[in-house]
Length: 175
Ligand code: SF4
Ligand code: SF4
Image (cartoon, rainbow, N blue to C red; front, side):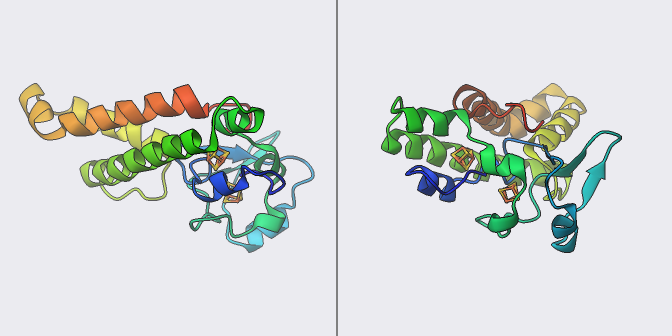
């Protein structure tokens, strides 16, 4: 969701975890954001008394942001913890890319497995899917759960731990 004015932009182009529902469930709009543009491009906005949000996975994310010039304010300013560490020199570009690749690999195992378990839910964020997964697993007896879904539980836990530790999914803009 970041601006293209740094050397870290290409990291984001190969990532997208803050757009595809892996890190965030919703994105809040700010006053200056052009809601008409978003509505025209097919966004479904969640309207609350004081704010509007859109859900992730983002409607405009198709391997990259397809409304880049018109993306909302928070998308322009957002920088995850990993990106900030690359910017400051704390983390090398190579190490950051390795972490992104690990997270994407886990995502690509976890999402389809949860979707298969709870039914097709491609429009939901990972957080929502994880809640549904937990409900489904809680409804199973222990031997069934252990024999058929132990790897999924391990992968999901590893992904969430990695995101929390290195990508900081719940910075101010989204939930
Ligand atoms: S509008 Fe673009 S930058 Fe913002 S969440 Fe969607 S795909 Fe990402
Ligand atoms: S999660 Fe971080 S590295 Fe990945 S696209 Fe978002 S800001 Fe860039």
